[in-house]
Amino acid sequence: MSQREISSDEAIDRLLTGLRKAEAPQGMERRVLEAAQARAAERNGWTVAVLLRARPWAVAAVGAVILSIAASNALHKRGRIEVTSVKTPIASRAVIQAAQLEEAPAAGRPRRGEVSLPRQNEAKAEVLSAEDALAVSEMNAPSRPAPPLPLTRQEELLAEAVHQAGPEELSSLRDEVRARQMELSKAEFHDFFEPPPAKGNE
Amino acid sequence: MTSVKGYSLALPSTEEVASEVDLAALVETYSALLFRVAHSVLRSRHEAEDVVQDVFVRVLEHRLSLPEVRDLRVWLVRIAWNLALDRRRRIRPDQIDAAFAETLVATSTPADQALNEAQQMSNVLRELERLPKAERHVLLLSAIEELDTREMAEVLKKSESAVRALLFRARTRLRERMNKGGAR
Image (cartoon, rainbow over all chains, first blue to last red; front, side, top):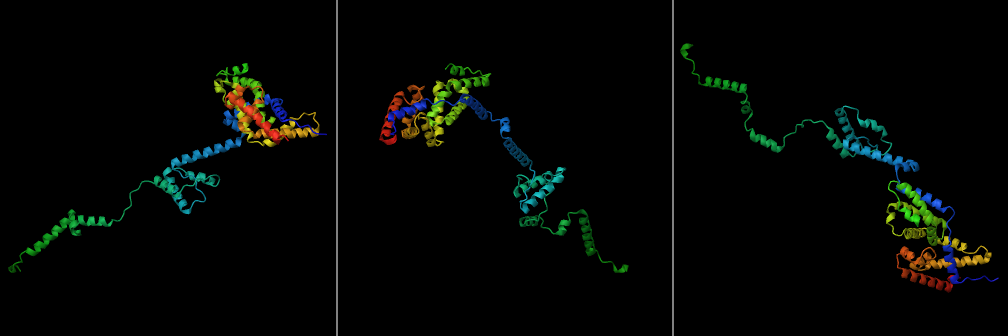
């Protein structure tokens, strides 16, 4: 039995007719209405409430990250050293500990680092660099007089130029020393110019 | 169309309620037309329904600017058309076209004859996809009898005379290619 070949025009018309008579699935209007409203609500109402219903873990994670960033910024502003990492180099840790030791008596309250240290291995411990720790320690250090420093060569030359006299001359500036020297010089003068005693008196 | 005009009656104070009512009217009025528009491109009922959903999502997103739309019917058709073309690029059209070609064969046809005709319809669809884009688009839109030449021209952003010329050339080219062996 030979199969009937359909002509080109007939095939085209059948195709176009098939496209024209395509019927929407049963219940499409209801599904479209519900889906469109739900999707529009999702797009327009990306609120925390919707997120909490859909992905509570994501909201919690975002909140934790925001809180940690805010806490980190606040501590940076106060110049506190909250947490040090276990991997901090020894030199850096020494500087940090020195800063904490200086900070504690000045603050008059327990160091906050002691509270947060147990948490240092938990999550995202913030590591301050050695430069930051040094700057913080210098900022919190109490004021003290400058330490005595040896004179430089130029300062020694200047001092010599000002003070040409020896120790005796310098000592004449003191009254008691000057008076004693005057008495001594008078005695020497008197002894030198005093006339010898007459022989007849002996 | 009265329900379309009613869409512009959205009251600012009850915007949410009004949009729901209007959306229901819009879906009832246009969903079938939009489904056929999308189906002409996608040839899949499931994909076409998804496109219709996307169209009305966009309607809700732009509901405040809807009163400015001059021809809501053409605007919706154009959205559906563009969404369908975009979705067509992301699916595997060969398998979908083969399934659609089988639906074009009468159910009363004997099995061997039905198989042969389904193969011929698949060839038609393949040759249709090989047409130049402008001609293919005009031919597909012409299958939707609700759209006249003016509306097709607005959807495709061409002049009416250009649409008529493209439609003539599309049918002629498709017929010639099938006569050369495309329909075999």
